[in-house]
Image (cartoon, rainbow, N blue to C red):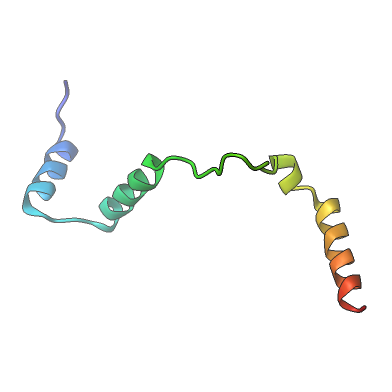
Length: 70
């Protein structure tokens, strides 16, 4: 196993309690990625294609706009 200067600096900073913005970012990213996906079972979820279907979104927006004028 290779132990370089950057590894030594990392551990020295950790022992002394010195944290950089990068350390905070890395820690937050690891916390976020460690979480399980939030999906509610028992309901149908949209597919990626349905989410990004611009024609469908425009149709929904137009019908909502027309319904608001009634």
